[in-house]
Image 1 (cartoon, rainbow over the protein chains, first blue to last red):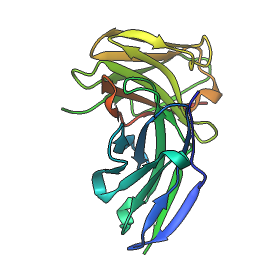
Image 2: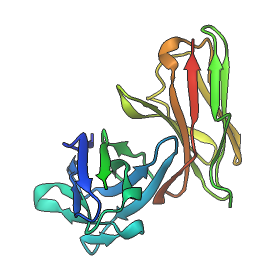
Image 3: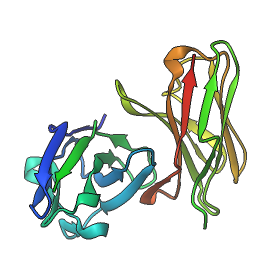
Length: 113
Length: 113
C-alpha cells in the first residue's frame, strides 16, 4: 500500500523568505502526487499535481513542486512567502488518477512578519 | 459552480443520537469521497463512490457508520448511535474520473457530547 511522510510537523519562516516543504512517498510504481493547502476552518484546496512528464510542476499561488524518483520525494517550494500562505499543507499520493488519495500528516506553516 | 456543498457546517449532538451529514458534489463529477479529520489520526478516507455505487468502504470505522448516494447530486453519511469519539471534521470531496485531484467541501464539524 502507498504511504506518504511529511517529516516536518511545523515550520516557521519569515515573510519574503523562501520555503520548502518536504514530502516522501512509498509506492512501487510511478505515483500520482498532489499538494493541498488547508486554511483554518476551511476545506482542502488543490495547489498542484504530478501525473507524468515534466518533473517540475507549477501550481497556484506561486507554488511549485519537483518530483524526484530517485529520492521518492515531491517537495513543495515557493521563492518568497507571503503572510497569507500561513496554513496547513498536505502531500497526497494516489495509485491511479481515479483512485483514493492517501494523505500525509500535514505541515503547519507559520509566517512571521 | 458553487463547489462541493456540505451541511450542516457545525453539529453538536448528544451521545446516542443519530447524526446525518449531507453532501452535494459538483455537477458532472462521478466520484464522491467521505473523509474524517482529527488531530490524532489526520485525514482518513471513510468511503468512496463511483457513479453512485460504493466502491470501497474499508475505512468506515464501525457498523454505526453508514453512507448512501441515492443519486448523482446527493450523498449522506449517517452515524447511529453517535459517540464522543466520533467528534471530528467530516469532509466530502468529489472528482471527475479523478483527474485534477479532488474538490473538497468546507466540512462539517461534529461534536458529540
